[in-house]
Amino acid sequence: MRKHRFLLGALILFATVAFLWGVIPKSVAAKKITLKFGHVLKMDHPYHKMALKFKSELERRNKNVVVNIFPAKQLGNERDLVEGLQLGSVDISTITSALTAGFVSGFKAFSLPFLFTDANHLFRVMDSDIGEKLVAGMDKAGLIKLGYVYGGSRDLYSRIPIRNLQELKGKKIRTMENRILIDSWNALGAIATPIPWGDVYLSLKQGVVDGGEGTGASYRSMRFFESSPHYTRVSYVFSWHNFMMSKKTWNKLPNDVRLAVMAAAGIAQEYERRLFVDEEKSLFKDLQDKYGVHIYHPADLNKWRTGISGVYKKNAKKVGGMDYIKKIQGL
Image (cartoon, rainbow, N blue to C red; front, side, top):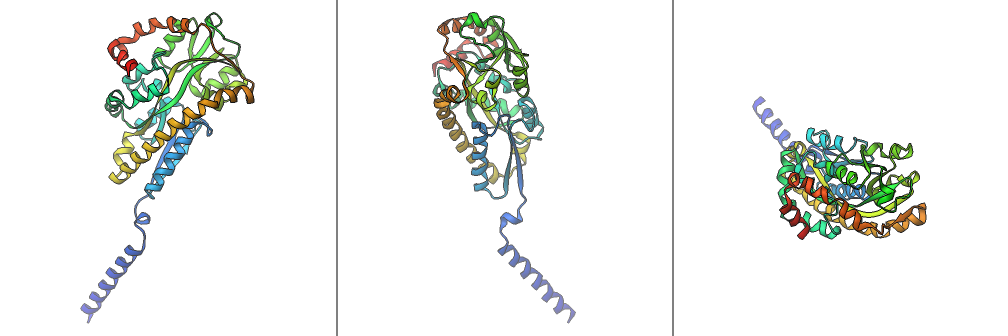
């Protein structure tokens, strides 16, 4: 009798478990995965819009994944974010190639002034074997490539008018912590002054520097025009940005989530590139009309190009050699 009761109880238990497994969705039963996506720009910037696109695409593909986005340097400056990716304390970020170059030397070449002719040239290089070969270096540094995205063309903004090379002489210009950018502005007669991104607004406002170099989109998003209402179009760098995941995070993900991450990243990459190019078309009119920014187009821009020729000679060996540089220029 006891034996029959035991068997009956076991059957009921088995049937109950089987029933519950059948009616409870596997997404509920499976463990939730939460990913932290940090970046340094505000919520009106294409970076953030790309992050939202990635979140939407990934969460749609896999209900077990949640992407939490932390904009405006909530998780730190770019250097902090790269180090966070390496440690696994940050899961995803978008970082300038100039800053990434301090961790992956293969990105150094992309800071050379006047290397790219326009955004489409930049995209051709990103999608070529040159971009593909950089993936191994990223992997060694503990970084997984999700995509290569656009950061806009880099210009000069300042507290006072700088309309030509003569007016640039002796001015303190904020740059990123990047040797080539520092060499470039020093070669043009400025005093290059590396300052972390999070400190730029106050540095401009307090007059620690006379101006800075960067993209129009970031200039508008960060409201640098409040203290630096002069903007000089030189387009000396077309910014290559790295959309990356922590290798430590990647290694923990099951294969189905990895596939979903890469699919979502591919869509987000193409979305960001198109978005940034489209926004640049109306950006400078917006800066003039809405914010009273004075925009200058130097008549002596060829002198700017000539002025940095020594930067190529000084840095060629460090970035892969002149043949590598010419290959980039020729694509």
